[in-house]
Length: 96
Image (tube, rainbow, N blue to C red; front, side, top):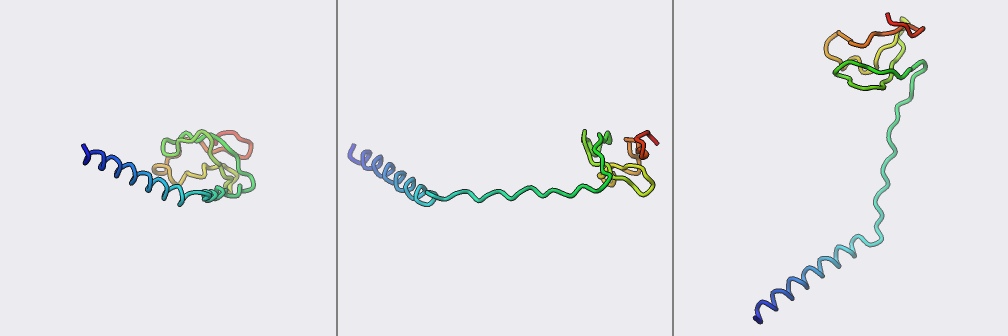
């Protein structure tokens, strides 16, 4: 019985010491502020449209104006192959 009481008191004392050390180490410490998210600048003429390509899968993606006046999903290079399932559009917004 005496050995069991010593064991219980030893475990309780050990846990208390570990708890106090942990508390002393973290007391007054504030978590580091999270860095602000990195936003990419929006290019002139960018529009937001859905992209229905299965590789893209976004309901709102940036569409960038090309030199010929059509718009392309900014992630078109990540789409599978040369096929782009969402039609490009001209400056008026009609399908080409």
